[in-house]
Image 1 (cartoon, rainbow, N blue to C red):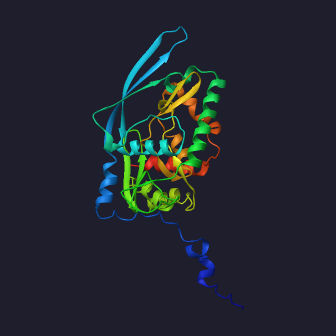
Image 2 (image 1 turned 90 degrees about the vertical axis):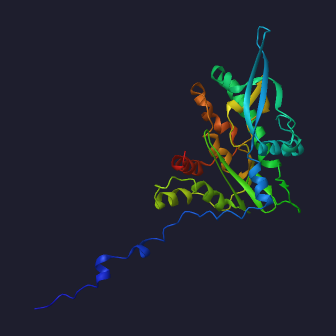
Image 3 (image 1 turned 180 degrees about the vertical axis):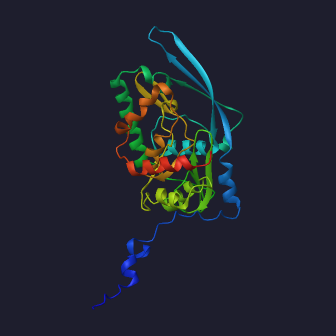
Length: 303
Protein backbone atom coordinates (compact mmCIF):
# COMPACT_ATOMS: atom_id res chain seq x y z
CA UNK A 1 0.00 0.00 0.00
CA UNK A 2 1.36 3.37 -0.97
CA UNK A 3 2.13 5.84 1.82
CA UNK A 4 1.68 9.63 1.64
CA UNK A 5 4.74 11.74 2.12
CA UNK A 6 4.57 14.20 5.00
CA UNK A 7 4.51 17.84 4.01
CA UNK A 8 7.03 20.09 5.69
CA UNK A 9 5.61 21.97 8.69
CA UNK A 10 6.33 25.34 7.11
CA UNK A 11 4.14 24.30 4.17
CA UNK A 12 1.26 23.57 6.56
CA UNK A 13 1.66 26.70 8.68
CA UNK A 14 2.37 29.04 5.81
CA UNK A 15 4.89 31.85 5.78
CA UNK A 16 5.60 33.64 9.04
CA UNK A 17 4.70 37.23 9.72
CA UNK A 18 8.06 38.49 8.49
CA UNK A 19 7.44 36.79 5.14
CA UNK A 20 3.85 37.95 4.80
CA UNK A 21 4.49 41.64 5.23
CA UNK A 22 7.17 44.15 5.92
CA UNK A 23 8.15 44.85 9.49
CA UNK A 24 5.59 47.03 11.27
CA UNK A 25 6.47 50.68 11.40
CA UNK A 26 7.34 52.20 14.75
CA UNK A 27 6.26 55.69 15.78
CA UNK A 28 9.06 58.27 15.50
CA UNK A 29 10.88 59.06 18.71
CA UNK A 30 11.55 62.54 20.02
CA UNK A 31 15.20 63.16 20.95
CA UNK A 32 15.82 64.00 24.62
CA UNK A 33 15.81 67.69 25.56
CA UNK A 34 19.14 69.50 25.25
CA UNK A 35 21.06 70.68 28.27
CA UNK A 36 19.84 74.09 29.37
CA UNK A 37 21.91 76.91 27.96
CA UNK A 38 21.35 80.62 27.22
CA UNK A 39 19.71 79.83 23.88
CA UNK A 40 17.21 77.29 25.24
CA UNK A 41 16.43 79.55 28.19
CA UNK A 42 15.75 82.39 25.76
CA UNK A 43 13.35 80.26 23.71
CA UNK A 44 11.48 79.12 26.81
CA UNK A 45 11.14 82.76 27.89
CA UNK A 46 9.18 83.49 24.71
CA UNK A 47 6.23 81.54 26.13
CA UNK A 48 5.64 84.33 28.64
CA UNK A 49 2.11 85.76 28.22
CA UNK A 50 1.20 89.45 28.11
CA UNK A 51 -2.21 91.07 28.28
CA UNK A 52 -3.39 92.97 25.22
CA UNK A 53 -6.33 95.32 25.72
CA UNK A 54 -7.95 95.48 22.29
CA UNK A 55 -10.66 98.02 21.50
CA UNK A 56 -12.79 97.54 18.40
CA UNK A 57 -14.79 100.42 16.94
CA UNK A 58 -17.39 99.78 14.28
CA UNK A 59 -20.14 101.82 12.65
CA UNK A 60 -23.66 100.52 12.15
CA UNK A 61 -25.82 101.15 9.11
CA UNK A 62 -27.86 103.71 11.05
CA UNK A 63 -24.74 105.77 11.74
CA UNK A 64 -24.33 104.78 15.39
CA UNK A 65 -21.03 103.45 16.69
CA UNK A 66 -20.30 100.23 18.58
CA UNK A 67 -17.25 100.14 20.83
CA UNK A 68 -16.09 96.96 22.56
CA UNK A 69 -12.93 96.15 24.51
CA UNK A 70 -11.54 92.71 25.18
CA UNK A 71 -8.43 91.40 26.89
CA UNK A 72 -6.44 88.91 24.86
CA UNK A 73 -3.40 86.90 25.89
CA UNK A 74 -0.39 87.36 23.63
CA UNK A 75 3.00 85.68 24.05
CA UNK A 76 6.46 87.14 23.63
CA UNK A 77 6.92 84.75 20.72
CA UNK A 78 3.86 86.26 19.04
CA UNK A 79 5.33 89.75 19.41
CA UNK A 80 8.49 88.60 17.64
CA UNK A 81 6.48 86.97 14.84
CA UNK A 82 4.55 90.19 14.37
CA UNK A 83 7.73 92.14 13.83
CA UNK A 84 9.01 89.54 11.36
CA UNK A 85 5.76 89.88 9.40
CA UNK A 86 6.02 93.67 9.40
CA UNK A 87 9.58 93.48 8.07
CA UNK A 88 8.91 90.99 5.29
CA UNK A 89 5.26 91.21 4.20
CA UNK A 90 2.40 93.64 3.86
CA UNK A 91 -0.17 91.79 5.96
CA UNK A 92 -2.97 93.35 8.03
CA UNK A 93 -1.72 92.86 11.60
CA UNK A 94 -1.38 94.91 14.77
CA UNK A 95 1.72 97.05 15.10
CA UNK A 96 3.22 95.79 18.38
CA UNK A 97 6.64 96.19 20.04
CA UNK A 98 9.25 93.53 20.59
CA UNK A 99 9.28 91.92 24.07
CA UNK A 100 12.31 93.96 25.13
CA UNK A 101 10.55 97.19 24.18
CA UNK A 102 7.49 96.63 26.37
CA UNK A 103 6.83 99.39 28.86
CA UNK A 104 3.66 98.68 30.80
CA UNK A 105 0.52 97.16 29.31
CA UNK A 106 -0.39 96.70 25.66
CA UNK A 107 -3.34 98.70 24.36
CA UNK A 108 -4.50 98.95 20.77
CA UNK A 109 -7.56 100.23 18.91
CA UNK A 110 -8.75 98.85 15.56
CA UNK A 111 -11.52 100.21 13.35
CA UNK A 112 -13.75 97.24 12.61
CA UNK A 113 -15.46 94.25 14.21
CA UNK A 114 -14.69 90.57 14.67
CA UNK A 115 -15.90 88.36 11.86
CA UNK A 116 -17.25 85.87 14.41
CA UNK A 117 -19.90 88.38 15.49
CA UNK A 118 -21.43 88.77 12.02
CA UNK A 119 -20.56 85.56 10.15
CA UNK A 120 -23.80 83.70 10.89
CA UNK A 121 -25.89 86.51 9.38
CA UNK A 122 -23.91 86.95 6.17
CA UNK A 123 -25.16 85.91 2.77
CA UNK A 124 -23.21 83.09 1.08
CA UNK A 125 -21.74 85.59 -1.38
CA UNK A 126 -20.30 87.69 1.45
CA UNK A 127 -18.86 84.61 3.17
CA UNK A 128 -17.26 83.55 -0.09
CA UNK A 129 -15.74 87.01 -0.49
CA UNK A 130 -14.12 86.86 2.95
CA UNK A 131 -12.87 83.33 2.25
CA UNK A 132 -11.20 84.49 -0.97
CA UNK A 133 -9.59 87.43 0.81
CA UNK A 134 -8.22 85.04 3.42
CA UNK A 135 -6.97 82.77 0.65
CA UNK A 136 -4.89 85.65 -0.71
CA UNK A 137 -3.46 86.32 2.76
CA UNK A 138 -2.62 82.65 3.33
CA UNK A 139 -0.93 82.35 -0.07
CA UNK A 140 1.17 85.44 0.68
CA UNK A 141 2.20 84.04 4.06
CA UNK A 142 3.19 80.66 2.67
CA UNK A 143 5.27 82.16 -0.12
CA UNK A 144 6.99 85.14 1.39
CA UNK A 145 8.25 84.96 5.00
CA UNK A 146 11.67 83.64 5.95
CA UNK A 147 12.53 82.54 9.50
CA UNK A 148 14.83 84.70 11.63
CA UNK A 149 17.14 83.44 14.34
CA UNK A 150 17.55 85.20 17.63
CA UNK A 151 20.64 85.19 19.82
CA UNK A 152 22.76 83.61 17.09
CA UNK A 153 25.19 84.38 14.34
CA UNK A 154 25.28 83.27 10.76
CA UNK A 155 22.60 83.20 8.11
CA UNK A 156 19.32 81.33 8.39
CA UNK A 157 18.23 78.45 6.21
CA UNK A 158 14.80 78.31 4.67
CA UNK A 159 14.07 74.85 6.11
CA UNK A 160 14.05 75.85 9.79
CA UNK A 161 11.05 74.36 11.59
CA UNK A 162 9.42 75.91 14.65
CA UNK A 163 7.98 79.12 16.04
CA UNK A 164 11.23 80.75 17.19
CA UNK A 165 14.93 80.02 16.82
CA UNK A 166 18.16 80.60 18.72
CA UNK A 167 21.42 79.16 17.44
CA UNK A 168 20.68 75.58 16.37
CA UNK A 169 17.62 75.32 18.63
CA UNK A 170 13.94 75.63 17.74
CA UNK A 171 10.81 76.15 19.83
CA UNK A 172 7.99 73.93 18.52
CA UNK A 173 4.38 74.54 19.59
CA UNK A 174 1.05 72.76 19.35
CA UNK A 175 -1.58 75.14 20.71
CA UNK A 176 -5.03 73.98 21.83
CA UNK A 177 -7.97 75.73 23.48
CA UNK A 178 -6.92 74.82 27.02
CA UNK A 179 -3.37 73.60 26.65
CA UNK A 180 -0.20 74.31 24.71
CA UNK A 181 2.38 71.58 24.11
CA UNK A 182 5.90 72.80 23.46
CA UNK A 183 9.47 71.54 23.26
CA UNK A 184 12.88 72.95 22.43
CA UNK A 185 15.07 70.76 20.23
CA UNK A 186 18.10 71.16 17.99
CA UNK A 187 17.48 71.36 14.23
CA UNK A 188 14.14 69.51 14.15
CA UNK A 189 12.86 68.17 10.84
CA UNK A 190 9.40 67.01 9.79
CA UNK A 191 9.76 63.57 11.36
CA UNK A 192 10.85 65.08 14.69
CA UNK A 193 7.85 67.39 14.58
CA UNK A 194 5.52 64.40 14.24
CA UNK A 195 7.40 62.73 17.09
CA UNK A 196 6.76 65.86 19.16
CA UNK A 197 3.03 65.58 18.47
CA UNK A 198 3.02 61.91 19.44
CA UNK A 199 4.98 62.63 22.63
CA UNK A 200 1.84 64.23 24.09
CA UNK A 201 -0.20 61.02 23.79
CA UNK A 202 -1.81 59.59 26.90
CA UNK A 203 0.17 56.61 28.17
CA UNK A 204 -2.61 54.14 27.33
CA UNK A 205 -2.31 54.62 23.55
CA UNK A 206 -1.10 51.31 22.05
CA UNK A 207 2.12 51.45 20.06
CA UNK A 208 0.34 50.08 16.99
CA UNK A 209 -2.17 52.94 17.11
CA UNK A 210 0.57 55.55 17.50
CA UNK A 211 2.49 54.01 14.61
CA UNK A 212 -0.60 53.85 12.39
CA UNK A 213 -1.25 57.56 12.94
CA UNK A 214 2.29 58.89 12.66
CA UNK A 215 3.21 56.83 9.59
CA UNK A 216 0.67 58.83 7.58
CA UNK A 217 3.10 61.75 7.47
CA UNK A 218 6.03 61.97 5.06
CA UNK A 219 9.46 63.24 6.03
CA UNK A 220 9.96 65.55 3.05
CA UNK A 221 7.29 68.26 3.38
CA UNK A 222 8.07 71.84 2.50
CA UNK A 223 8.19 74.25 5.45
CA UNK A 224 5.71 77.12 5.26
CA UNK A 225 4.91 80.10 7.44
CA UNK A 226 1.74 79.32 9.36
CA UNK A 227 -0.80 81.21 11.48
CA UNK A 228 -2.14 78.12 13.22
CA UNK A 229 -5.58 79.35 14.30
CA UNK A 230 -7.43 80.89 11.37
CA UNK A 231 -10.94 81.49 12.68
CA UNK A 232 -13.57 84.27 12.69
CA UNK A 233 -12.51 85.14 16.23
CA UNK A 234 -9.08 86.18 14.95
CA UNK A 235 -10.24 88.21 11.95
CA UNK A 236 -11.27 91.88 12.11
CA UNK A 237 -13.34 93.21 9.21
CA UNK A 238 -14.60 96.61 8.12
CA UNK A 239 -16.67 97.57 5.07
CA UNK A 240 -16.52 94.02 3.67
CA UNK A 241 -12.72 93.88 3.93
CA UNK A 242 -10.36 91.99 6.22
CA UNK A 243 -8.44 94.71 8.06
CA UNK A 244 -6.55 92.78 10.75
CA UNK A 245 -5.45 89.22 11.56
CA UNK A 246 -5.09 88.52 15.30
CA UNK A 247 -3.99 85.50 17.36
CA UNK A 248 -0.44 84.68 16.28
CA UNK A 249 0.43 82.62 19.39
CA UNK A 250 0.30 79.43 17.29
CA UNK A 251 2.32 80.83 14.39
CA UNK A 252 5.67 79.80 12.98
CA UNK A 253 7.35 77.77 10.26
CA UNK A 254 5.85 74.30 10.07
CA UNK A 255 5.23 71.45 7.59
CA UNK A 256 3.04 72.58 4.73
CA UNK A 257 0.00 70.60 5.97
CA UNK A 258 -0.05 72.21 9.44
CA UNK A 259 -2.14 75.29 8.58
CA UNK A 260 -4.79 73.14 6.92
CA UNK A 261 -5.22 70.63 9.73
CA UNK A 262 -5.18 73.30 12.46
CA UNK A 263 -7.91 75.21 10.62
CA UNK A 264 -10.35 72.49 11.65
CA UNK A 265 -9.19 72.62 15.29
CA UNK A 266 -9.86 76.35 15.75
CA UNK A 267 -12.58 77.30 18.23
CA UNK A 268 -15.80 78.31 16.46
CA UNK A 269 -19.11 79.51 17.88
CA UNK A 270 -21.97 77.02 17.40
CA UNK A 271 -23.79 79.36 15.02
CA UNK A 272 -20.67 79.66 12.83
CA UNK A 273 -20.02 75.97 12.18
CA UNK A 274 -20.30 76.41 8.41
CA UNK A 275 -16.96 78.26 8.58
CA UNK A 276 -15.23 74.92 8.04
CA UNK A 277 -17.12 74.41 4.78
CA UNK A 278 -15.26 77.37 3.28
CA UNK A 279 -11.87 75.66 3.64
CA UNK A 280 -11.98 74.75 -0.05
CA UNK A 281 -12.13 78.45 -0.90
CA UNK A 282 -9.41 79.45 1.57
CA UNK A 283 -6.72 76.85 0.86
CA UNK A 284 -5.09 76.37 -2.51
CA UNK A 285 -3.63 73.07 -1.28
CA UNK A 286 -5.48 70.55 0.88
CA UNK A 287 -4.12 67.61 2.87
CA UNK A 288 -6.96 65.15 3.56
CA UNK A 289 -4.74 62.25 4.66
CA UNK A 290 -2.83 64.42 7.10
CA UNK A 291 -6.09 65.91 8.34
CA UNK A 292 -7.48 62.49 9.23
CA UNK A 293 -4.22 61.49 10.91
CA UNK A 294 -4.02 64.68 12.95
CA UNK A 295 -7.65 64.31 14.04
CA UNK A 296 -6.59 60.97 15.47
CA UNK A 297 -3.52 62.48 17.12
CA UNK A 298 -5.57 65.25 18.75
CA UNK A 299 -7.98 62.65 20.11
CA UNK A 300 -5.20 60.87 22.00
CA UNK A 301 -3.30 63.89 23.33
CA UNK A 302 -3.30 64.65 27.04
CA UNK A 303 -5.78 67.38 27.94
